[in-house]
Length: 346
Ligand code: NAD
Image (cartoon, protein in one colour):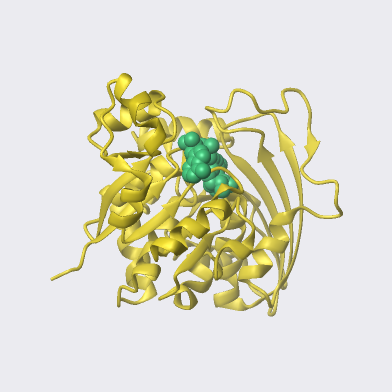
């Protein structure tokens, strides 16, 4: 009989609510519940959806007075969870770690945490096998996940020597009405490089990855330009064929489909009735794939709100130490989330 692991999600914002829904779709895991800190609209919606809500003991009556009946306290959440997905705001995961350690519970953290929060920074296409059986993993950020999927596929197939990346980062998520910029293109970092390349090198240490990033006034998706040197000459068809074999990478031809912007991609996700308009796949604009001897460059769009959801589910398989091979884990995660289904549409 398949063992079912009870997963608790601490932090129910952009990432937490999506990971919680992905857990509900996966029969290997049971969503124990979520931790909410304020009885706001998303607590109310989660409660209406029948999700168990755990709250800080001192806030119990705040929730009850809003008609939200908590399932338990954070202490009970810690006791009842087999694995915790921490999707708290940047830096709070590190503050939560001692609590997980005291309860003896494994945990999966997000990319807004410093790498030291976990034993390993994780991206499934790169280091799934190394992650199996670990107690604490950190799923790298949305941009780093987008970069690493491409680099690790090409590294597996042809060996990557060096990559330069330009990240054009969305200014805020759609719900974040207090963030910007509103009318500017701003450097992400005042250092010499952005953090994405350094972060990617934690996962892919034998490749030199340099990144720069600017932040732009949009909420829909990031766009990234990758310039990659391989260890051998390749042809464009070899590159396209290699990328096409991985369901989390979707090649889209804007000339054929008209999909030449993040807004049209978002509209397509809406039309396809993807939950929350989520696009779990790297959208590689096929026309931009340029290959010259051992150099490959391309442009891709990354839906920041959902791109890390499959990797969070894979991370659960690794931490739960489920004895099935990497290919089967990814295939299962993808099938349950409907990843790969857009290939027929685009
Ligand atoms: P968010 O602000 O949308 O949600 C965070 C949730 O955590 C909120 O509901 C908040 O109330 C709750 N919270 C507050 N204090 C908490 C605590 N002490 N412990 C647990 N939860 C607490 O944030 P998000 O965008 O979902 O980001 C979560 C993590 O995921 C961050 O590390 C972020 O860098 C990373 N991430 C975000 C995105 C994105 O595009 N939003 C993409 C990839 C990774």
